[in-house]
Length: 113
Image 1 (spheres, rainbow, N blue to C red):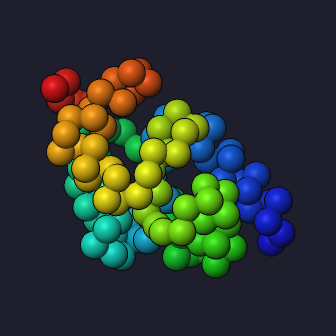
Image 2: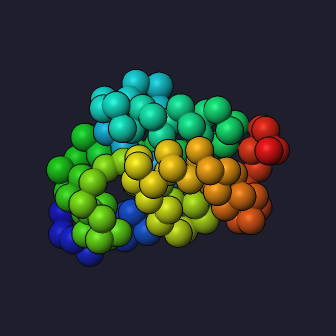
Image 3: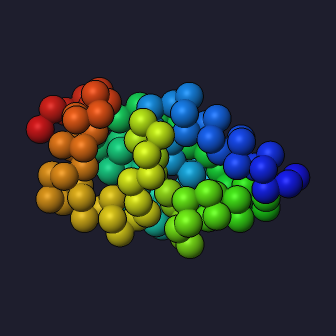
């Protein structure tokens, strides 16, 4: 696949879903600890999200890095906007910023905190 096709696929996922996590593995079976941690945080907050397994496609795994200009996976997107990777998401969650960010984007969480 060309970069443009891969970027179009990523853009389509990001724009057609409120919350998208590009990760290694699936939400049910994360294939790395960092992806697993972000899944745990989203599950804890009761966020409905789409998990995209980058291990299924090398073009996607490399494409998401160039799409976001961010070198690591997982990558969390909320309402089309790149939020960050595991460390950023974890820090935002611990400080209550992730919950505020989701709320400000009108993303429904099970636990309004």
